[in-house]
Length: 215
Image (cartoon, rainbow, N blue to C red; front, side):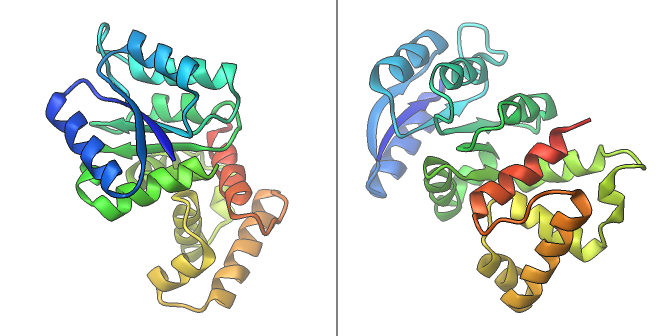
């Protein structure tokens, strides 16, 4: 699996490179600025891009904007964005095109190698990997008349885990319930939110996230 990595801090970039290589990823390019990232994404067409939100020369949202531009040229190109803090606007921009293959993780998650590598693989496969803190903040912003108000606390818990990209089996293990119970919760969630039921985990997560981003 070919990866383009963009991170301006040398030590973190080198660490991520070594970590991904140790898990059988091929680093097609490891760059430290926006223009180099744009070129790498256009010329190398990687299986997934792992991108720091803030890159030179602007140190604002250069990395994110490069990734979004690449996704406009190549819809659905898998992108996992790394950020120091939860930036809800960035999360909305990343999700706005409605395509799969997106992730938004806080940099702290990188220190959990298994969690980080799993997120990269999930995004590369067209799924979604959203940081729990991002999901919580998006949920917290919903208005009182939102259909989310119809969900029970247990259903909200299930939906948060779904939005992180977890399968029914993983949710059941996390919540210490049966997969059948999780399936019932997810069915209720889709019914209450007016979303089509699907056996495709990636599509169901994207549908929930797309709903969360509507105002």
